[in-house]
Image (cartoon, rainbow, N blue to C red; front, side):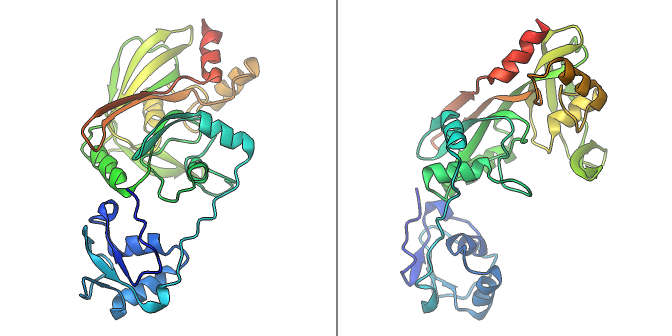
Length: 314
């Protein structure tokens, strides 16, 4: 459900997508071209009211509430200038869509594309999907590293985003990954090392630290090669670089992980196998209940480059 309330109306009526949202966040979304300082000033001065009553920036709005706007905001319109995607990238993203309904999209994210914009990024997955669907209402439900491929979920409305975030908080989402790790892992291992975000060599990473946050990863060997192991990994938490940090902590770093692994070893591997240039980590599947309590399981096929490296060891 999308809030299509025209910006020209004097009052905004809160729909189900924005129920229990903070007033300031709602107004920042509705008026992206308006300075945040101006929005907070209008709230403080009482120029913006909920059901004719004064309110605070952190006030939670509810379904059916009427938000009164000052008259000079009547001409405000949301900026819908989407990024122009290179045709090759647009095709890549479109071909990667696994599922699409009124509430959410599931994509088999290609390796090498950042999920959100940042320094030095010309475009991101979220930019691309918003452009393809011509909608600023699309949001990321969770994250994947730029170097990681596989399942990622994006919401089409705030109601589903809130629902998905609730599933994450209560650990009701099942995620499995495939990875090629260094060395031989002969039996399953559960890693519970706590992780804390820190900068290492000026790069943001996760470090094992007793003062960190709970993180749990289960590594299950599928096939053992001469010096590597293909593993399936289930994660019950979602910390920054969790799998990569946990793999390093058990002395089995993910193949191609220059942040957490043996740089000299990986450079030698890529010299011998120049067609494989990526991190050997793939988000294989994700399972969760939708808003109507229907169970969904989505599986992302391995990209050609990942399948190619498994044949190298065969």
